[in-house]
Image (cartoon, rainbow, N blue to C red; front, side):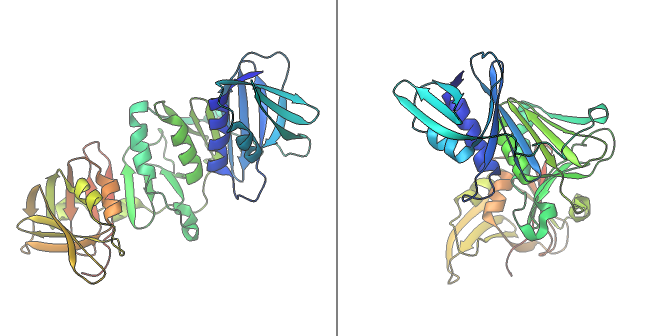
Length: 356
């Protein structure tokens, strides 16, 4: 068969980077011909992924198992747009003009069924379609997913009355209901990251059946199935400060994200926000010397007799939460989370950092 080199390399590399458990462990994928497409499929623990690669029509059936690391290493030196893929004498042969490589193919018999335990009852399926123009919004929410294994129930994207991610220090939420019936499931972070990498300018489908045990992600050329995370995701609504109890509000903060982005990378990762008639941001070095200061534009509202507040915040979290948008920021007590409302209807919470 003739396959497009960059698509086959991209598929193998994305699966390897996104799902391979360890650099020292062989990680196999099943290659299967489907007429004018070649599928590259693999299973990593509770996650199954399959990517379809364009190729020339081929007669008959073509299937083998191959170590993805070996496949990526064999494809990297090939610069031709297309290459010939053949299976012969236990080897997968790749050739394009003067370039050629071989990878040992593994008999399919010993390999387990890649979707065992990931079956979905399609008669009772619920689907949420994320349109192409809102995929970046989903990616923004996913930035707050935790990577801490000690709280594994946070290591993913929660689907319920909103799409929510939190690492315990910050929270990103997109308040759209998932499905017509109440649901509370969390999709593993690795599945979400791989789906977002492949979606880009395409719509993304998120599906689950009535059991809520398995979730399915679909985008152009990609299918992912994953077992949802065990453990109860926290009730995020309980920690969201409400606007009617805000002590101080900074409305239309147009440059706060840029200020946070330009703040120096200090060791304790703290940017100090101060409101006292005006809003300012500053950062200090390890000796306590001020090395950065910048005013913040926006309309200030004081809702208590106290007209000043000083809060430390992680500048990376702040830059992630705001970007280049004009936002409204709610401050409560010094230890309360900072609430940031974005113009697209999403919101972010950031816990204060350090002692003031």
